[in-house]
Image 1 (cartoon, one colour):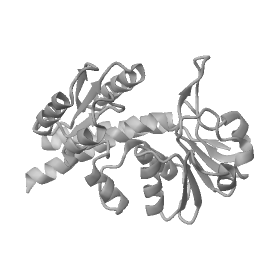
Image 2 (cartoon, helix red, strand yellow):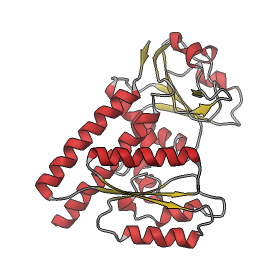
Image 3 (tube, one colour):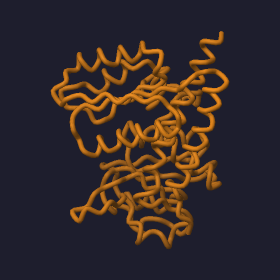
Image 4 (cartoon, one colour):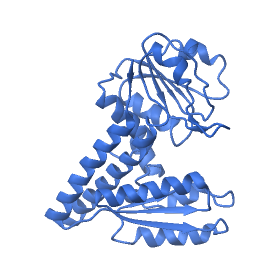
Length: 286
């Protein structure tokens, strides 16, 4: 059994980005820029946004954080996005989800310039991703794909079960796997007999927010388990959607929680921001 170390891989990716950013600044006098918008005071979101800001600074990426009250109107948020769309210092714009209920998430995400959509949630980028065209990929599924690449885990021809069908993880994850020639089954809360699907899978990717849903008796010997879930128990301990202790001895590869997929998300966000800056340079050089 091999533990997929997302923390170490994320550090490697961040260092790759730092080196490339330094070269871009030196050779082209271009400093990549990222703006993150946080509406409300959700503690987990605030911690995540702060981590993104620190990671940007460490990589040499210009970073702005816009913190707005819970009472911020949709119109005010859209006005801020418009300003950022027109700010030449910014290559990437990220609106931290979830948004307060009085704000329509789709309207907000569609307002972001697709060329600055480093979260990969704009319909333009989603459509290009599904069509296997160059695009900004959602950071978490992008990070999982990088893990597969780093650890030499073959996807072509493999049976993969994705548990969870969210727009943020499940759906884009399935699209990327299909593009990699895997045979993909997507399960959700209405799936009958989940175990019947997971027992046949070479790879199981779970992202539903239910602690320890995936047990050892639900996977076959040698399966790869990718746990995207992160849950805080009443004890304060962080745990995943897979029962790590129960599953680990049956797996060929498994991600821990914390320290698995989670750290990859910020690393791939930085990669997307660097990519956006390089694309800006190409457009301006024409």
